[in-house]
Image 1 (cartoon, rainbow, N blue to C red):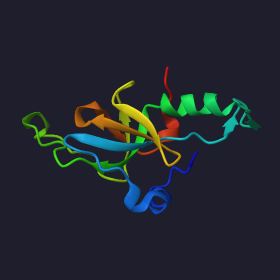
Image 2 (cartoon, rainbow, N blue to C red):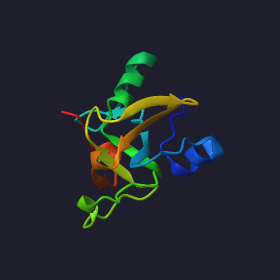
Image 3 (cartoon, one colour):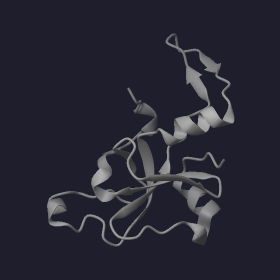
Length: 129
């Protein structure tokens, strides 16, 4: 699985093979959490998990990096006062929305434009309760 959260790494890796969304769809690269976890006292610990458990955690993520916007994104009248997300921004989207898939080892998701709830700066601060 391709684990980088960096837009430049992602576009260099996928290049022209990047799936292109149609209509009001947004292509998101799902956030992959750091392998290192911090305990409450600030010390670091490594947590070993199976590959399938790690992948499921990634696919349950609420955050994604915008890789591409479909040609009809945010064109509906209901979005006229919105500031839509841009390629390269991290966003929070509705849980269980869209279609999740793995493309060339990259965890991706297509979501409709109305599934994106907010633009965020640091996806590592978001947890699912």
